[in-house]
Image 1 (cartoon, one colour):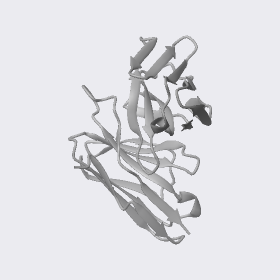
Image 2 (cartoon, helix red, strand yellow; image 1 turned 90 degrees about the vertical axis):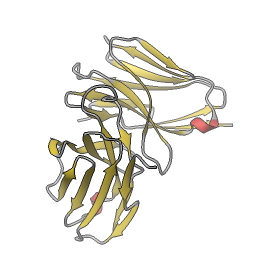
Image 3 (spheres, one colour; image 1 turned 180 degrees about the horizontal axis):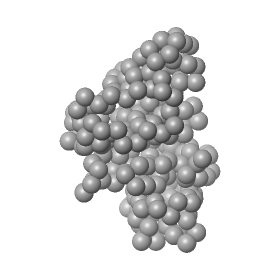
Image 4 (cartoon, one colour; image 1 turned 180 degrees about the vertical axis):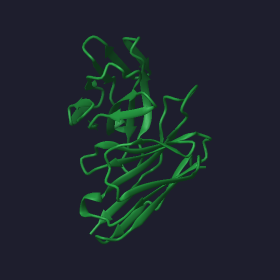
Length: 111
Length: 115
């Protein structure tokens, strides 16, 4: 059973455009929602994260929008750059520091 | 100075063999994990250890056996390897409570190919 559903599976964006990745969850006990970025041949690395009592968090070009009532959250990458090309995973944390990951989105930013 | 290091990085072996992957972290974290990433890049937790104690044991065949000799090390031993075990295995660590409890630090992965 997929605890966190992520879409789209892949995304192609022009340089300078906005990349948007969406995630949804069912378990209301989740208390922390991070996004991880993974480059080929590397492990995932924390990009940005949000708690459910906040509706938006922005760090540079990266913004998380969180809708607690809809149990959805999304990552927006503004002014997308070729260096942003990577696989992005949303995740949710349950009791005991157990993290459940989405299925990943492969982002390609075309110069 | 690598924070979470895994060895080997690549492992190619025949079906039926037994193999081990080692993981060490120098971050002082008290919780370590093994994740499996399949060919579709889906990341699935396998095990979690806190201070050498097994905390999470997801539905994983008992051919997989984790061992934590101390809180800085978490090894993964796999018996009777099958084709479906081919994947990238990631070790990760975190602190269980307090500042930094929200952050998983991953190793670079160990790519296992079973022929």
